[in-house]
Length: 310
Image (cartoon, rainbow, N blue to C red; front, top):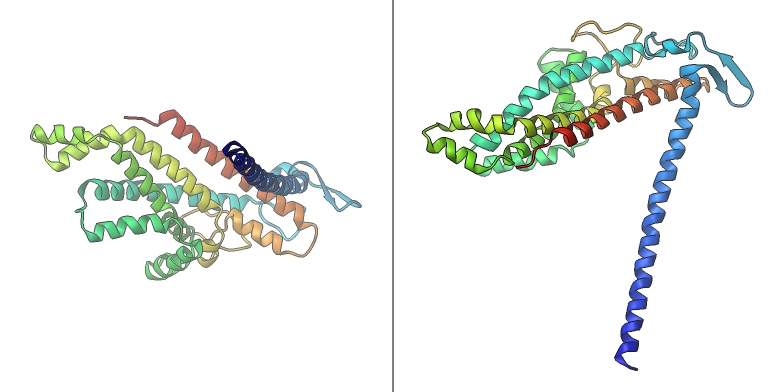
């Protein structure tokens, strides 16, 4: 058998293996997309009726909803035709405001310290390693931590403030890492040039490095914060541990008010055995999906629009 025949056989075998592997990859992608589209279609077909018009249950019953557009502003109710997501939506907005207010200064301060001032020792390396690992910690652990620290130790009780601070802990690692990457992108020549002219370390960092890093830092922080918020407002486990209520018929008016959030409200509606709640819970899922997709789109736009390359 000639070398040409052997090489041809090997190429054919290699091409066959590559084709099988590519087929397997395409099959996995198609299954994932079809499954996702099926779930989205099911949610949209059920929730659309609750949001915008007729309420259909199976193929027989068809009910007309009074004021379908009020779903976002009305209170919860034991009647699925009248139940609204207003308090849960307001609670979610409160959580977002608290998370943004607490995360921005803490994330920026921690990133600047770790990147510019922290001594390069074992403790710093330990902190840096665990910052990355914290992003993968299950959210239920943050719920237990928030229950112990904010609800009991700090005395905030089962309030929207406790929930917001707990979710702040959830997304802080993402924001700190993103901010540090922006600071790392600033060339060392800027630091060296400032200190060569007699500036102190503090003056060099806050007078030259931070201003130079602001475009990338803000982009990284906002992107990280928006992506983190997308995760935070979709989390149910930590809020359940924080004592978020499943039935609320009032709007939270201050940080110490009791609250619920959209994931909790949807979880509560889905737990009801009556078929009428399917459309109502699907409408809540549509609202949450729209909010999450909008925030992720905003993060991508900010990153692509303002990202700065050195």
